[in-house]
Length: 457
Image 1: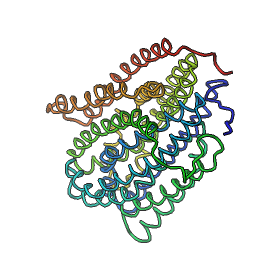
Image 2: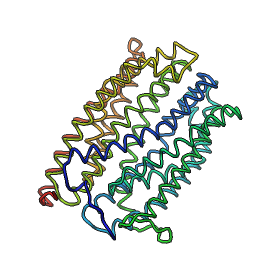
Image 3: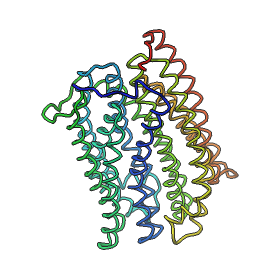
Image 4: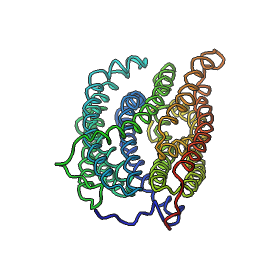
């Protein structure tokens, strides 16, 4: 099959990294705007309790979904490495295994989310005045989660072969659909959080259809042929081998965030509202950082597949410097304009805005540390090593945060929002140090075992 000129394997690295990463950032921002639109519209038309209701679902939803989203990472890495080594059969079979994996994952998530959403929320001590709305939002969201799974798997494949612009276009279209339906369902039908959940589900369906069509229209080994969809055993095992540790890592991150959310819930619904709004603002910073993770995964994946290890080293350091600069700038802007940004979400509670500013100060400003942690994780995963970052994350993120909450935060003098949020900084710092040390070890091991070939310039 035809293979276009691949800027991931050749050409000036910095320029290629920038042009590859920018569409991912824009795509991720649009995806985040789905939830942002939910919060802004319910905040404007339904009040701060509805904002808290939507915000309360985030950590538990991520906990349930991340295990399967990790498999999409596995599919992307498998495709990137095969694409870099020009193994077209491997690319074809991985693509056609990934799609049914996404569908099965979506069905399982729908079953779990619809049946047990209220029980999960109660386990997190969600206040009674928020619980009913949160439960409705979660059930509708999980009812259409298969669309989200298909989009994530397919877009991961597109990025793995160098196409970051198509997912941006599709999310742009779906984003417009989401915002229009949000306003329509909430203001015309007075559906509250149910309306924004339904709008999100429909828009995700639109993006899923578009990304599948894009794969069907490709002319290289990643072309999707619906009649050839099936589970190929070797490719499925590889997706699981790489993706399951990534999914477990994401879920463990979410477990620590669920525990933190439970601690946040103990401060009451006004604090929850401020925290939810601030967390959504921080999300825009995070997706800028996470874009470099995705860039690192796919650039390292293709170049390690082609055994261009000198180029791999350059990629990691360029992404590390870039994510530090981007994280420092965007984190500062989020904090500096925090009051104005929080006012977009919250219109009826100055106290909630004050609480949101506390979170922005302790989490947003040092967010570049999280970005460095993401890049080091992406470097390891791109080289096919997924178990090591999972183990390090268990110790560095989940272990540190959970220990912090059940020891230091439990002390009366430290039972404050500031102390709770500081656990993020401690966990990021500890984890990124371990991840970078692990990358150096794995990198040197690969060079010794597989050798290196000259760069394709």
